[in-house]
Length: 453
Image (cartoon, rainbow, N blue to C red; front, side, top):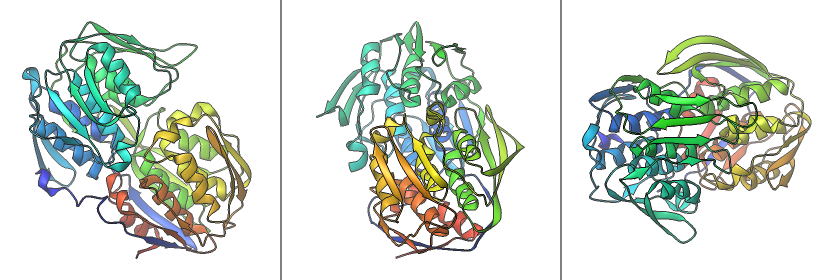
């Protein structure tokens, strides 16, 4: 049941120290993909009939989404580790919840649910923690308002927000920035809109919503263009059909184990069950451009996604100018990519990543601070950063990193500590549970030396 959720990750700060080790070796299975887990819960909640979901990521972010759909009238029950049954509301739709929908630290959960809730004749108040409440919501709410959703927000278009849905009309919308969250929120609202809802992407973003909607029996149009991203469409009035869904492994989480193996002195590591999707494999491509020894092998399928086993070996990395076209497919991996850059020879330049400014933290500032406090020269850019690498085992370490309530900054810093000359301390690692509950177990399995303090 939902009561099995872990303790609130943001209640008690906890420090962690990562000490240098000489070898990283072993194999771990990629935890369930967070993006796919959110979507599986949401789509099962509005489907007709009972769905079973396995491999679900049971981090706090996804559990908050599960609590939200239960509050809206779906039947939700945990039946085992990563295994859930969800009875969808079907044609009758959501019911107005009795209390606020609390999304904690999850921008994905809040923004996609705004679209999903917007298609139903209900009123719901969305809230989150201090970090989420500081993040912008208007880029999602603007198109939803054009469709007929009523949305009232706090100052600056931030949470808390009151969403009133129902009686939507289809729109054609071109998001000004590449954002899978904006695209997905519009598509989810479009499921119950009058007409065909169309999103013209500036450039291709992760397509998990399109793939999973198809798995649930929805017809989704995708038109590839020579210039610009794809044009995605969904016809309103289609009913999702319950299914047995399996969640593929998360590339964003897998990147930490792979990076740790790449910057290690000896050994090698593999990650199994990772989803293989061109909109999510930018980190693999970028690391290979740096000279990373990475190999992939087919490893099955999971509800519309292919999966692979990725093998990483210690590598001599070189600095690169990251192709901005790769940024959307590795936006969440840029903090750990910056760690690779710190151990590379030469300079690495990242641009076209202004999206990082509005993540769990201002990740550009957080990345630069993480590296600088550990002896790495880094220059902050408006839309990215330039890292002057210190070569293999060349990062001095010894610094304390401010996580800024950002799980990816915290995990990246701990990976950096495994290969630095001196230990790396992170001031708060409690929020790691929001996205990667198995992180510390996986680190230990591969030979990292991390202790909490």
